[in-house]
Image (cartoon, rainbow, N blue to C red; front, side, top):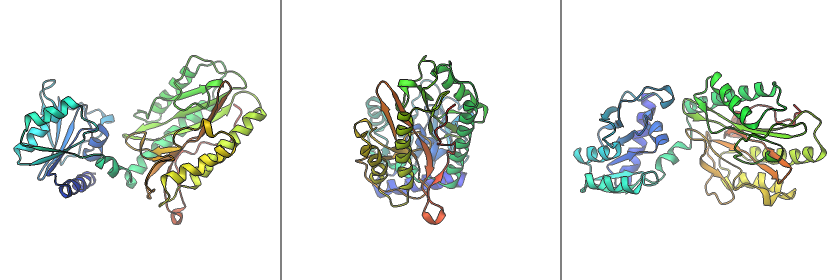
Length: 368
């Protein structure tokens, strides 16, 4: 993997040089991990003209969840808690003769930004912007393999929960059990806080589990994902508890399912982000649910659970092959509940079979 990380840093170095910066200081943890293989707590990465250095406050713990550091990097450990790795990185850049330093202004605090200027007053600071985030959008096959395993773990945890008794248990209890099962099956942890929503709570995006107990006839919507070697996926499903679904539940589920299918089928290299959103949104809007829709239909996933691209009405840009995204339309009816269906897929050309579905738990409306 050292060659992969070196190539990523080389690509960033070339981009910085083209913009007039001789070095870059990476502070956002996911970006550090992408370029260095690991992101110990508080670490920053200096991508220099001649040498790349990872600077840490204190010795890295070696926790596998932090990743495995590229052995080609020089590691500088500062005496914790006195040293600020970002400030030390700017000082190192100046000492090696760099005249300009690109930094992630969107991640640095104002105080920290000013500290960089103070330690190296002759170093011109420039904004790196979202350069690394944009570089991360297209995944290599090693990254996709990690996402595929994360999806398998998520599917397995969810399928086991569906085989257990659910009536009478609380949303909070079910969420904790799902997260335990993720770890039991090899995840580093949950990709994000697991959402379990029942009855009138169901269908809400990002619902925080409460002490409400599962009742017969409820919609039960679940959204979870595994974090495997830093890569995060997402799956969401909706079920009915303990009885034949009511007519209104079947009707609502069928509409959301049709919208989700339309969004999935719109995924292709060259498809505009907004067109994927529109494909799903039009189905729900035509059914009279336009006012209840979320701002976006989906988003990218990878080292973070919510990355670019955003599949939203105002999003600019087009999909490329090997971009993993979620497609997750949902409708919540106040006081009644709702439906969310969420998959993680990888954009593939038609010649390769079209979009690759990573999360494969059934989307049939099951009565549990």
